[in-house]
Length: 206
Ligand SMILES: Nc1ncnc2c1ncn2[C@@H]1O[C@H](COP(=O)(O)OP(=O)(O)O)[C@@H](O)[C@H]1O
Ligand SMILES: [Mg+2]
Image (cartoon, rainbow, N blue to C red; front, top):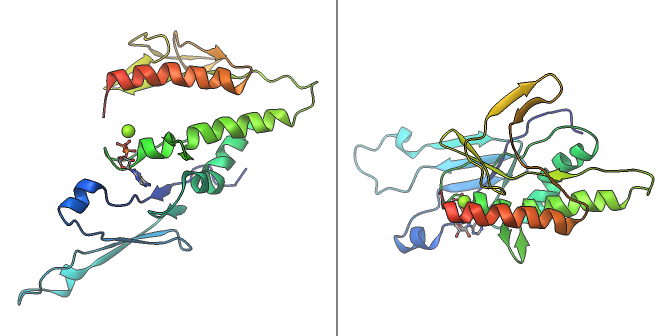
Protein backbone atom coordinates (compact mmCIF):
# COMPACT_ATOMS: atom_id res chain seq x y z
CA UNK A 1 0.00 0.00 0.00
CA UNK A 2 1.42 3.34 -0.98
CA UNK A 3 1.76 6.05 1.61
CA UNK A 4 -0.63 8.35 -0.22
CA UNK A 5 -4.30 7.56 0.22
CA UNK A 6 -5.68 9.46 -2.74
CA UNK A 7 -4.20 9.55 -6.21
CA UNK A 8 -5.50 11.53 -9.15
CA UNK A 9 -4.77 10.25 -12.62
CA UNK A 10 -5.77 11.83 -15.92
CA UNK A 11 -6.40 10.09 -19.21
CA UNK A 12 -6.61 12.07 -22.45
CA UNK A 13 -8.59 10.46 -25.22
CA UNK A 14 -8.01 10.96 -28.97
CA UNK A 15 -10.22 13.37 -30.91
CA UNK A 16 -13.49 11.66 -31.82
CA UNK A 17 -15.04 11.52 -35.32
CA UNK A 18 -17.26 14.51 -34.66
CA UNK A 19 -14.34 16.65 -33.51
CA UNK A 20 -12.25 15.56 -36.51
CA UNK A 21 -15.17 16.33 -38.85
CA UNK A 22 -15.09 20.01 -37.93
CA UNK A 23 -11.28 20.19 -37.95
CA UNK A 24 -10.94 20.53 -34.21
CA UNK A 25 -7.37 21.05 -33.06
CA UNK A 26 -5.71 18.98 -30.37
CA UNK A 27 -4.37 21.51 -27.88
CA UNK A 28 -3.22 18.96 -25.28
CA UNK A 29 0.22 17.49 -24.92
CA UNK A 30 1.31 15.31 -22.06
CA UNK A 31 4.56 14.72 -20.26
CA UNK A 32 4.24 11.22 -18.79
CA UNK A 33 7.46 11.36 -16.81
CA UNK A 34 6.46 14.54 -15.05
CA UNK A 35 2.77 13.56 -14.77
CA UNK A 36 1.80 16.73 -16.60
CA UNK A 37 -0.97 17.76 -18.96
CA UNK A 38 -0.03 20.81 -21.00
CA UNK A 39 -2.85 22.86 -22.45
CA UNK A 40 -1.67 25.07 -25.29
CA UNK A 41 -3.72 27.95 -26.56
CA UNK A 42 -5.15 27.24 -30.02
CA UNK A 43 -3.17 28.62 -32.97
CA UNK A 44 -4.76 31.83 -34.08
CA UNK A 45 -4.11 34.13 -36.95
CA UNK A 46 -1.97 36.80 -35.42
CA UNK A 47 -3.54 40.18 -35.26
CA UNK A 48 -2.06 43.51 -34.32
CA UNK A 49 -3.79 43.30 -30.98
CA UNK A 50 -2.23 39.99 -30.02
CA UNK A 51 -0.58 40.06 -26.64
CA UNK A 52 1.77 37.36 -25.32
CA UNK A 53 -0.96 36.42 -22.81
CA UNK A 54 -3.13 35.23 -25.67
CA UNK A 55 -0.63 32.51 -26.53
CA UNK A 56 -0.47 30.99 -23.13
CA UNK A 57 0.35 27.50 -22.04
CA UNK A 58 -1.03 26.05 -18.87
CA UNK A 59 0.55 23.11 -17.10
CA UNK A 60 -1.33 20.84 -14.70
CA UNK A 61 0.44 18.16 -12.67
CA UNK A 62 -1.18 14.95 -11.45
CA UNK A 63 -0.05 11.68 -9.87
CA UNK A 64 -0.06 10.14 -13.31
CA UNK A 65 -1.22 10.99 -16.82
CA UNK A 66 -2.02 8.70 -19.73
CA UNK A 67 -2.01 9.78 -23.36
CA UNK A 68 -4.28 9.10 -26.29
CA UNK A 69 -2.52 5.84 -27.24
CA UNK A 70 -2.69 4.30 -23.78
CA UNK A 71 -4.32 0.90 -23.39
CA UNK A 72 -6.70 0.01 -20.56
CA UNK A 73 -4.30 -2.65 -19.30
CA UNK A 74 -1.56 0.00 -18.93
CA UNK A 75 -3.83 2.10 -16.73
CA UNK A 76 -4.69 -0.99 -14.74
CA UNK A 77 -1.14 -2.19 -14.20
CA UNK A 78 0.26 1.24 -13.45
CA UNK A 79 -2.58 2.74 -11.40
CA UNK A 80 -5.65 0.67 -10.53
CA UNK A 81 -3.98 -2.62 -9.63
CA UNK A 82 -2.48 -1.30 -6.40
CA UNK A 83 -5.94 -0.08 -5.33
CA UNK A 84 -7.47 -3.52 -5.91
CA UNK A 85 -4.54 -5.22 -4.20
CA UNK A 86 -5.02 -2.96 -1.19
CA UNK A 87 -8.50 -4.47 -0.77
CA UNK A 88 -6.99 -7.94 -0.54
CA UNK A 89 -4.85 -6.57 2.31
CA UNK A 90 -7.93 -5.42 4.21
CA UNK A 91 -8.20 -1.77 3.17
CA UNK A 92 -11.33 -0.07 1.89
CA UNK A 93 -10.77 1.24 -1.61
CA UNK A 94 -12.56 3.17 -4.32
CA UNK A 95 -11.86 3.93 -7.97
CA UNK A 96 -13.87 7.02 -8.85
CA UNK A 97 -14.18 7.88 -12.54
CA UNK A 98 -15.07 11.48 -13.24
CA UNK A 99 -15.45 13.64 -16.31
CA UNK A 100 -17.88 15.20 -18.74
CA UNK A 101 -20.05 13.12 -21.06
CA UNK A 102 -17.98 11.68 -23.91
CA UNK A 103 -14.61 12.04 -22.20
CA UNK A 104 -14.04 8.27 -21.94
CA UNK A 105 -15.35 7.06 -18.55
CA UNK A 106 -17.20 4.03 -19.96
CA UNK A 107 -14.26 3.29 -22.26
CA UNK A 108 -11.98 3.20 -19.23
CA UNK A 109 -14.32 1.22 -16.97
CA UNK A 110 -15.83 -1.21 -19.47
CA UNK A 111 -13.61 -0.93 -22.54
CA UNK A 112 -13.90 -3.14 -25.59
CA UNK A 113 -13.43 -6.86 -26.22
CA UNK A 114 -9.75 -6.44 -27.17
CA UNK A 115 -9.08 -3.70 -24.64
CA UNK A 116 -11.12 -4.50 -21.54
CA UNK A 117 -11.53 -1.86 -18.87
CA UNK A 118 -10.75 -1.81 -15.20
CA UNK A 119 -13.92 -3.58 -14.09
CA UNK A 120 -12.93 -6.82 -15.83
CA UNK A 121 -9.26 -6.29 -14.98
CA UNK A 122 -10.21 -5.89 -11.31
CA UNK A 123 -12.26 -9.10 -11.37
CA UNK A 124 -9.26 -10.96 -12.83
CA UNK A 125 -6.93 -9.45 -10.25
CA UNK A 126 -9.20 -10.42 -7.33
CA UNK A 127 -9.62 -14.00 -8.47
CA UNK A 128 -5.91 -14.33 -9.33
CA UNK A 129 -5.24 -13.36 -5.73
CA UNK A 130 -7.81 -15.82 -4.35
CA UNK A 131 -6.27 -18.62 -6.41
CA UNK A 132 -2.95 -18.13 -4.62
CA UNK A 133 -4.47 -18.70 -1.17
CA UNK A 134 -4.25 -22.05 0.60
CA UNK A 135 -7.53 -23.99 0.91
CA UNK A 136 -7.60 -23.32 4.65
CA UNK A 137 -8.26 -19.61 4.01
CA UNK A 138 -11.91 -18.72 3.55
CA UNK A 139 -12.89 -15.67 1.52
CA UNK A 140 -16.35 -14.10 1.45
CA UNK A 141 -16.90 -12.01 -1.65
CA UNK A 142 -20.18 -10.13 -2.06
CA UNK A 143 -21.07 -7.82 -4.92
CA UNK A 144 -23.63 -5.01 -5.18
CA UNK A 145 -24.33 -2.69 -8.09
CA UNK A 146 -25.93 0.70 -7.48
CA UNK A 147 -26.50 3.91 -9.34
CA UNK A 148 -26.58 7.33 -7.73
CA UNK A 149 -28.42 9.73 -10.02
CA UNK A 150 -30.08 13.02 -9.10
CA UNK A 151 -29.41 12.31 -5.42
CA UNK A 152 -31.34 9.04 -5.65
CA UNK A 153 -29.84 5.61 -5.05
CA UNK A 154 -31.05 2.67 -7.11
CA UNK A 155 -30.13 -1.00 -6.80
CA UNK A 156 -29.43 -1.95 -10.42
CA UNK A 157 -29.71 -5.68 -9.71
CA UNK A 158 -33.09 -5.68 -7.95
CA UNK A 159 -34.39 -2.45 -9.52
CA UNK A 160 -35.27 -1.15 -6.06
CA UNK A 161 -35.41 2.67 -6.04
CA UNK A 162 -34.86 5.38 -3.47
CA UNK A 163 -32.57 3.46 -1.16
CA UNK A 164 -31.45 5.32 1.93
CA UNK A 165 -27.98 6.03 3.28
CA UNK A 166 -27.83 4.82 6.89
CA UNK A 167 -25.26 4.73 9.62
CA UNK A 168 -24.79 2.28 12.45
CA UNK A 169 -22.08 1.53 14.98
CA UNK A 170 -21.55 -1.97 13.59
CA UNK A 171 -21.64 -1.24 9.86
CA UNK A 172 -20.54 2.38 9.65
CA UNK A 173 -22.17 4.08 6.66
CA UNK A 174 -24.22 1.74 4.48
CA UNK A 175 -27.03 1.71 1.93
CA UNK A 176 -30.25 0.28 3.39
CA UNK A 177 -31.98 -2.62 1.56
CA UNK A 178 -29.11 -2.97 -0.87
CA UNK A 179 -28.89 -6.46 -2.35
CA UNK A 180 -25.59 -8.26 -1.84
CA UNK A 181 -24.71 -11.25 -3.99
CA UNK A 182 -22.35 -13.95 -2.83
CA UNK A 183 -19.79 -14.70 -5.53
CA UNK A 184 -17.85 -17.95 -5.35
CA UNK A 185 -16.38 -17.72 -8.85
CA UNK A 186 -15.49 -15.05 -11.38
CA UNK A 187 -18.55 -16.11 -13.37
CA UNK A 188 -20.79 -15.36 -10.37
CA UNK A 189 -19.29 -11.87 -10.23
CA UNK A 190 -19.68 -11.39 -13.98
CA UNK A 191 -23.38 -12.33 -13.72
CA UNK A 192 -24.02 -9.64 -11.08
CA UNK A 193 -22.22 -7.16 -13.30
CA UNK A 194 -24.25 -8.20 -16.39
CA UNK A 195 -27.58 -8.02 -14.52
CA UNK A 196 -26.81 -4.53 -13.22
CA UNK A 197 -25.40 -3.37 -16.53
CA UNK A 198 -28.61 -4.35 -18.37
CA UNK A 199 -30.60 -2.06 -16.06
CA UNK A 200 -27.98 0.68 -16.41
CA UNK A 201 -28.25 0.58 -20.22
CA UNK A 202 -32.07 0.66 -20.04
CA UNK A 203 -31.93 3.80 -17.91
CA UNK A 204 -29.71 5.49 -20.53
CA UNK A 205 -28.46 8.32 -18.34
CA UNK A 206 -25.54 10.06 -20.03
N1 LIG B 1 -8.92 6.41 -24.74
C1 LIG B 1 -9.76 6.27 -25.79
N2 LIG B 1 -9.31 5.79 -26.97
C2 LIG B 1 -10.15 5.65 -28.03
N3 LIG B 1 -11.47 5.98 -28.00
C3 LIG B 1 -11.96 6.46 -26.85
C4 LIG B 1 -11.15 6.63 -25.68
N4 LIG B 1 -11.91 7.14 -24.69
C5 LIG B 1 -13.15 7.27 -25.21
N5 LIG B 1 -13.19 6.86 -26.49
C6 LIG B 1 -14.37 6.88 -27.36
O1 LIG B 1 -15.04 8.14 -27.15
C7 LIG B 1 -16.44 7.97 -27.06
C8 LIG B 1 -16.97 8.49 -25.73
O2 LIG B 1 -16.41 7.72 -24.67
P1 LIG B 1 -17.28 7.17 -23.44
O3 LIG B 1 -16.41 6.22 -22.70
O4 LIG B 1 -18.59 6.64 -23.91
O5 LIG B 1 -17.49 8.52 -22.61
P2 LIG B 1 -18.27 8.75 -21.23
O6 LIG B 1 -18.62 7.40 -20.65
O7 LIG B 1 -17.31 9.51 -20.38
O8 LIG B 1 -19.48 9.57 -21.57
C9 LIG B 1 -16.72 6.48 -27.27
O9 LIG B 1 -17.05 6.27 -28.64
C10 LIG B 1 -15.39 5.82 -26.93
O10 LIG B 1 -15.23 4.60 -27.63
MG1 LIG C 1 -20.50 6.58 -20.12
